[in-house]
Length: 223
Image (cartoon, rainbow, N blue to C red; front, side, top):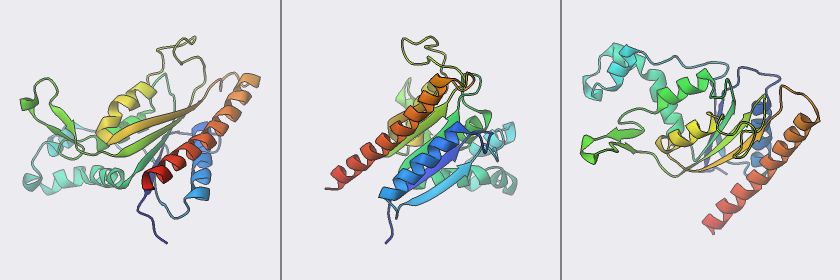
């Protein structure tokens, strides 16, 4: 039996074996596959193979009309075209990313810069006034699975306002075609104490509940 539902998993941690965000993503995948074994999966590991940063030549190619691009410009955009094609296929975008220096890993930012592209994921028209950018994609959900060395990033917490990973992804999400965003986080990693162990256990449980919630929503929308 085939499925018309596709999940794109993007891993952004530079770590492989000891990555908490990857472990959360693995749990999500396991729980999801137990319920929806026929769904299609795409995996982009930018933590292990970061996309290149955009360059002046890349920007020039992206803003050159498709029919007028040189062979070199097409080459420069080839990876971007592939990443955008993966995003287009996805109904659910699963981003597993640790917080590095209070923001997103450079590898994830490079992925974002490759996929948020004029006339591919958004259009630009000054006739729209002060909001000239308009998303092209829509109908996707985003799940953010993250981890941090410190703690207290939620509103009212010790470090409230210092999390620049989640707000950045939420802002960008409309250009990724996202309508709904969900987040699960592990904290206290650098402390390695009982608080961290409780945080890991709670996040793992939250992932299970999130999969259950998303599954129920999917079933109800199909009824």
